[in-house]
Amino acid sequence: MKLTIALLIISFSAFAQDSTTYLKDDKLYTQSGYVIEEKQMVKIGTGTMPDGDFKYIRIAATSLMQYSGNNRSAVNSSNSLPGRNRGYEYKVVRIDKRGTKKRGYNYYPVINVGAIRYDIDIDNAIATGELEVPDQYKPKVKPLVVEMKGAPLSVADELAKLKKLYDDGILTKEEYEAQKKKLLEQ
Image (cartoon, rainbow, N blue to C red; front, side, top):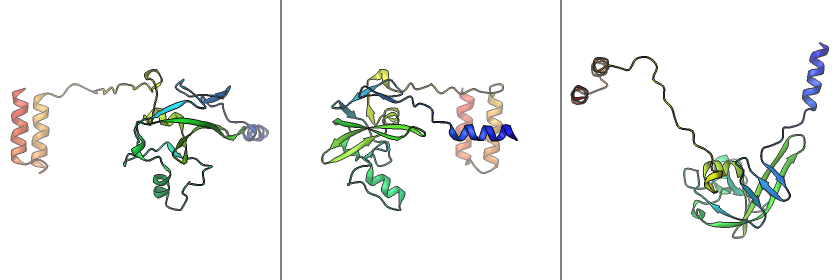
């Protein structure tokens, strides 16, 4: 019982772990190693939302222009940078630090787009291509490896599967014959 109480007290007083994104000497070091500082020009990539808008570049939280409401999807699309801004370069006005020592800090470069300021969720924007960075800072794509378990299927196994699909009514006679012909020609 004493051990349980001690563990609870320790866990409640524990602080957040340091983020891999950090601010040092007015420079923001991202997870990928890319460095951003005030007055630097950053190039906007392509938006990742279905309508082409930017998911990770949003109207600044401190802006009076920020839209709020009960409909989450309307709020998200209203506050995101419009897709027509892709390919342009904007100057970083400042780097905002938000959070607490206990919970950890998040850093947001702020850019001016016309009269409106936008926050960039920097690590997600780099990872999704919303912010263009040199190739060495882009996330490394791991190749997709598909493992086949068991022995490879023979032509007879494939024909049996096709016949079952035809018998179940999933394939029409024409589709069945075409697939069968294709298998037998291999």
